[in-house]
Image: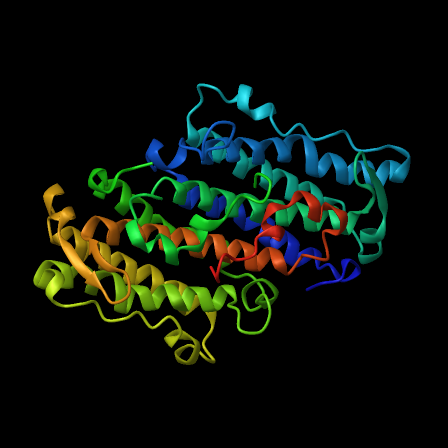
Length: 184
Length: 184
């Protein structure tokens, strides 16, 4: 495990650059059985999760990077609306969302690299509206782990669709015993 | 959720054909921080998980399909050695394993499609050495969910490497609160 001050920007960007491609490779062209089914009322399908990842690219990660660099702790981040996508993406099909996610991520990583952050910049601080003081390193690490938490969620939501179909093998399939840890 | 008898072979194959590409898109070219780190003694890295997925292609899924079709319940499946890869892949690099997984999956799905299974074949039964009677539909569903359980595991093992780096955001990142559900 890494200490916050040791965060490698290169490793973080390497992961961030790969997840949209991985999500597209997994979901593109799959039937609605896999992509539109959820885990029950009030839970998200893979389609909804991709919508949420897009919202993060539009309103969360890079705006917060800029808030830290421009305002430090004097201006709290705007809260992240975790549900905006549900209404916004009604009636859309999945592939345009997958393409939007990939395009926005490329644009955001290009913008991040244009900032030419130095290792010491990663210790700069901002204010999260609920969590309090956070660092730029923590924000960037969270961006990467947020991808992973939703990849984890996508795999679980999809596996749920075959929960009965696997029969007695359910006992051996850890993903079917994951309770979602509070939603993701 | 699907009942066992409703399993769609097309949907199952659609997922099985995508996971190796998704795993490659996620892991190819990443540093050892992401791919060689595990969750502690006796746990698997992403590298080890890919090795395990290869073992499944070589020794588990299609051999068991053939055992069901040729012997029904009269011949129990060979037990699946879940640890063979650990010794076999010592000293190897990741990309050849990712390529092996993709190639073996393509070969196995081609072999599966050559069997021209009809919907009624999916009810045919075999004998699992520990779980008892299982159906071909359950075996094929398990092959797909096994992919998802290990994608779930890969995302968790990778997230673990940034457990400290995310700081207070840990509270919001479900994948960091996943206990592994018995290893995967």
